Image 1 (cartoon, helix red, strand yellow):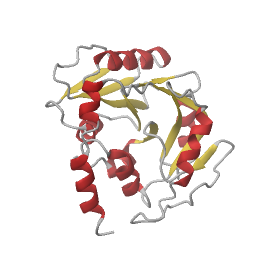
Image 2 (cartoon, rainbow, N blue to C red):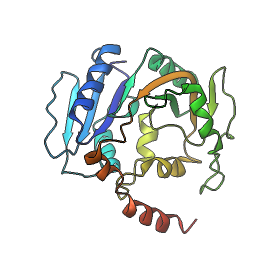
Image 3 (cartoon, helix red, strand yellow):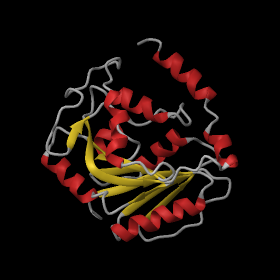
Image 4 (tube, rainbow, N blue to C red):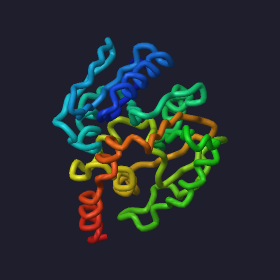
Length: 237
């Protein structure tokens, strides 16, 4: 894992969560490389031998931060996470890298997400992604939506925002830095017809979603500009 995978995530005004995730990653995969793009008002105070922190101007945005982090990746695979997530014994990252090694036609493997407040079965949570066939995207999927690859991997038009992927393929799509927060749909919309995405059933990543942090949510919910930009951007399609 140290030689093949770099974990990237964006951090904003949540130093405790960023530190907790970094320590969590080192617990499961000691020495794994981690790149954090941080645009907090106060610089992230965290050190580690395998850690790179990219300090950005305040509130630069998620997409810009992820692009900056991706530029620092030189391993063949990259894992994209958010700072409020944690690996679990059921994440099985190594198994998913082995899957990508075995199936050269697959570019992304998404993980099932266990949300703290809802305590939902992570496999059941996948059901909401079965409707994202990307039938209206500029390009049709290279492999049909819901195609079964093996015993627990299915092709999906979109997966949760935690996944491991081929670095060069992610770099070929990137994130639209004009979109500050609403990167998820746009990324997979543009990836359709260019990358093949799967979901790995039986995996689990823990997601601590705190809607009661008013200060953080003030920035997180400021998406009116994103919506306006995305509407104008997609009109041509």
